[in-house]
Length: 101
Image (cartoon, rainbow, N blue to C red; front, side, top):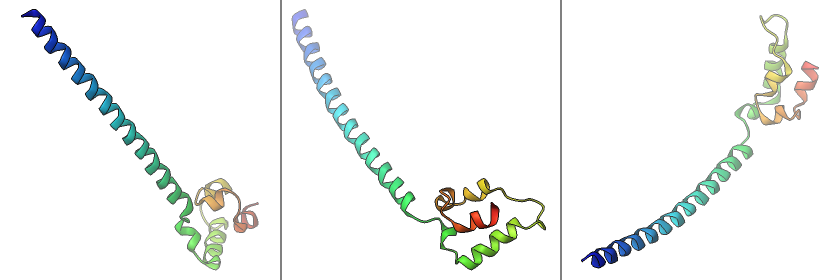
């Protein structure tokens, strides 16, 4: 009787261990898929220009000149304006250097 139960418990243990291995493989596949999707999302974000970069140069120039004028109650610092878009942050926008340096 005890030996029969022991055989059943061992069989159940073997079945559970196989299920554990299968679930670990499945989890690993899901983790890889998650990383692939995160990477793709990051790629989309980095390649999509900021909406402000779509503004015509003349309008953007006017807005920045207005923001840098002394008539406003605050004077934005270069760092604050640079945080508007990646292009500005990397210092590639000529208006930042022309207006705020």
